Image 1 (tube, helix red, strand yellow):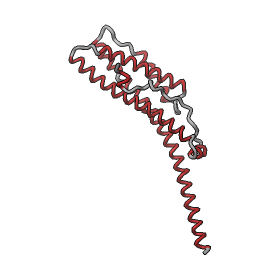
Image 2 (cartoon, helix red, strand yellow):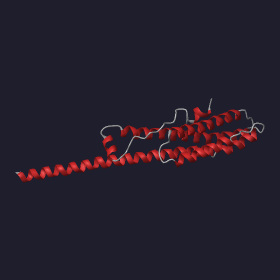
Image 3 (cartoon, helix red, strand yellow):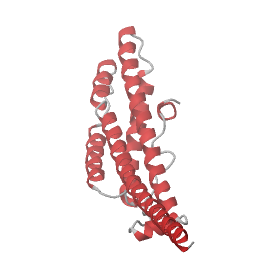
Image 4 (spheres, helix red, strand yellow):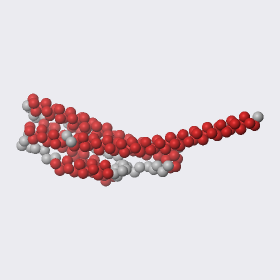
Length: 201
């Protein structure tokens, strides 16, 4: 009678150890993957900004063609945005408050300039010029929507990570492996708008 009982308890003990290991290891890998998603979303955000920056010289050329008397002065904004993007990429953690605000200001400023140029280009009457402008506008709309998605994803990934770090019982696993709440500053709702809201009146 004792022998089967001992076997049963031994089996239960082994099963409990396996389950505990799976829970703990699963929790660790989940936090690790979450951290990687934060970094990936930050990279996607930077790439989306770079994608939009690469379109600006083309926009300046088109603007000079159709409105040579009022060429857009975007060089300063463009260079500043490039420097900030480089700084963002060098940071190994989510952006601090100062960097977040600076990044936000540079991108919001560029959005306003692009919107202003699109407003001025609406008066172009030549069919050929309108065709070129519309094709370029669609490129900007796609880049802007990618930027909106990337910014939203970055905010989500960090808030999701922090929510799990502070939620019992997974918070115990977080403490066990040294995962702590990330002190980060989400982008404002107006920082990276979808294209229709960003560029149209």
